[in-house]
Amino acid sequence: MENELHFTVDAKSEPVRIDKYLSTQTGLISRNRIQRLIEEGAVLLNGEPILRTKEKVQPGDRIRIRIPPPQSGAIEPEAIPLDILYEDSSFLIVNKQAGLCVHPTEHRKTGTLVNALLHHSKELSSIGGVMRPGIVHRLDQATSGILLVAKNDDAHSKLSLLFKTRQIEKIYWAIVLGPTPPEAGVIDQPIGRHPADRKRMTILADGRKSKTMYRILRTGLGGTLLEVYPKTGRTHQIRVHLRHIGLSIAGDRLYGLRKRQGRGAIERLFEGYPGIGLHAKILRFVHPITGEKIDLEAPLPPIFQSVVDQMICLNRSKNDS
Image 1 (tube, helix red, strand yellow):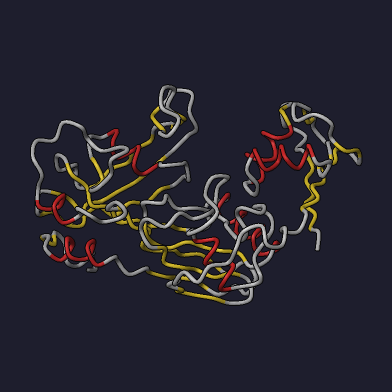
Image 2: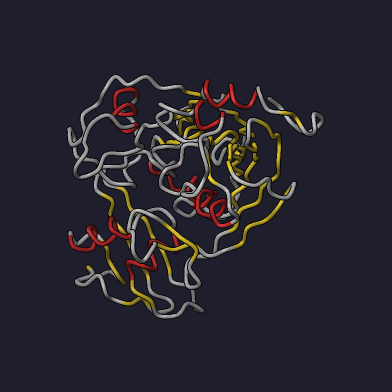
């Protein structure tokens, strides 16, 4: 069944391209997805189909997006095991394993979390498009931990709004290498696409505002365990911000520090691990439909837990293991 989304441009809004406006203002659909919908005639401005992606919206404009249902059989279901932490009729929350890609791409159609989700449930939201059914937010392939998946478009829209208005609390654990940082800190630096390497993000003066907070939980084995609180949700945000203050997440080859001498105990323990020492551990929010308080914690991967167990606990009154 086709779903529709409706928006009215704020009276104080500056003229801006409609694809950029919808992707940044709603937080629901990627800019590429919006451009494809425009090309398909599925985006209406003041009742008329948009003919160009460069069309600019003006204050007071009314926008309607017709979301087509997912194409049956576009992505094949696969019996990939899922670690489900919570499930109801609106959404499910999984503990994603490290190394598992969240959604298929044009060049990779199998072996992803979406393939596993399609096998588990016939009900997934369509807002993200054929390649991303149910996916409200994402984790890097190398990152393990909590991921929220919507079963219908209404739940997807409500959950996306919670993310956009920062009413969902996400807490990560990161095992980092490099000099021990201050006990707690705030990294407030804008992030954008690296100008010379499109696979990486970096600190850019004209990048998007990004803020990450952290505190030390433990030290040992030549590294530090951090509890990290991202206040914005940029691509690779934690990895980029920690790199900015001279830290490298264990196992991270993309943002790792290149001039480390030798291999320490943590690096040896993570050898052969399919991911990095970054885990989305805690998710807290109020259920947008039932009002229930959701407070979930994803168990650490065994290698991650082994490193944590061998570290020194700095403040037992604040930490859990």
